[in-house]
Length: 509
Ligand code: NAD
Image (cartoon, rainbow, N blue to C red):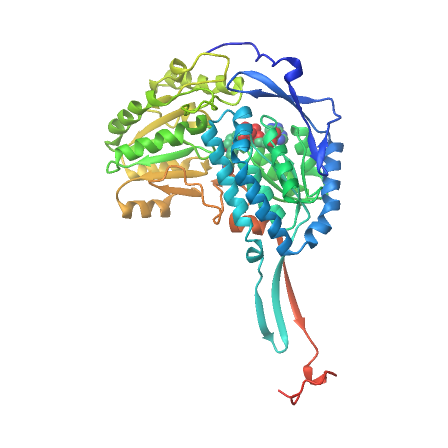
């Protein structure tokens, strides 16, 4: 692994300035503060992203507020037509989109395009917005009285997003928010901000009116300005647990509705009767895909009974085949980590686990490719126990731990005692046990012989416990509810018997 004090900078003139998008155009930041953006595979700085002041956030919010009445009043059929155009453009440009993600995040291009595809599914779901916004109607609830429900947009909604899915997670938010008739201010991760500007341009090209979708870049200053702004009605957040908790507490204290999705430690339970090849393939792809920087990554395998030896051997056998390198090279399967600091922090868990008594079956530092990129090969730790830091912490890198337990009950107890509850999976051939598991486990998203059970777009995504603050999961039906308020109308019309209109029949009932 290369040890450099700080990553070199691309030639000064090649460092791209990345600015805000307000009112349908690029607006250069005026704070004088910015953050570095890297190409993690090359280990160089390629961009500098402007950090917004509270005044710049205010400008974006006022722009979104002004755009709201007209956007809200646009007919459902016109809004749907725009969504179909967004769908077409994102579909056509998935590779271009993917290349932007790979350049700043580092994930391999196929994975980056997969990210766009999963976000696209949410956009497609939103193309059905007329159906999704239908209310209920009760005729003759009382004599001559009808009652019906409608759902209306909130106003200006905001999104604060993490680095690990710079296209998809914003789509989870802006697609339903806009489809429901809200306008939007996005504060993307400062580590890979360009995807949000690309999305803004696509939305404009699709016909979204200027001001409906805005992007402000920044750090805590921008986030705090969003959380305190009186004209923002709702905040969606996805990121780490401490910040999710903070966003939830601050946002709700100023009267906003908030959904704040946090971190994860996802366990995959493997029972002795499981198909071990299937389980090993699943563990490898779910642990090391996107260099483990997924909130639904499997970071901990729980091997039950005598499954441990067979499973560890099967996983170990697969590791040398994982090619690590620049995600733009076609045969590469795993890219770099997002920053040098994060890579070094992840690598430190390998020694930490060894010191605390785990077996280091594979040490990723030994298979790290040469070069300045923020690379780390894949690591496998066996005999990890719940007291170890490698078990307790969300490592968020290509380090998979294996914990061995005696029984199914021990395994479920481990999962249920974990403070996170995002995703989990069980591998078994026994349908009855799998069914019992879905009943027992205290986790929001459950896979049965499926390692990364991210719900399809017509269900909602969300964890339990420290993986979600708030009560509404994101996208799907709960996303539509989050971005709308219910209204119930009780109506009575004058009796037709008193009408001055000649109804042509005796006006008695
Ligand atoms: P992060 O919490 O560091 O950052 C998320 C957002 O919060 C960014 O926009 C960032 O600018 C902002 N932020 C960071 N520090 C802040 C502070 N002190 N005050 C206010 N705002 C701040 O998360 P990350 O490192 O970008 O993303 C990785 C984390 O996100 C992991 O924990 C991962 O599990 C989690 N994640 C969760 C889900 C989910 O669905 N539950 C999905 C993706 C990622």
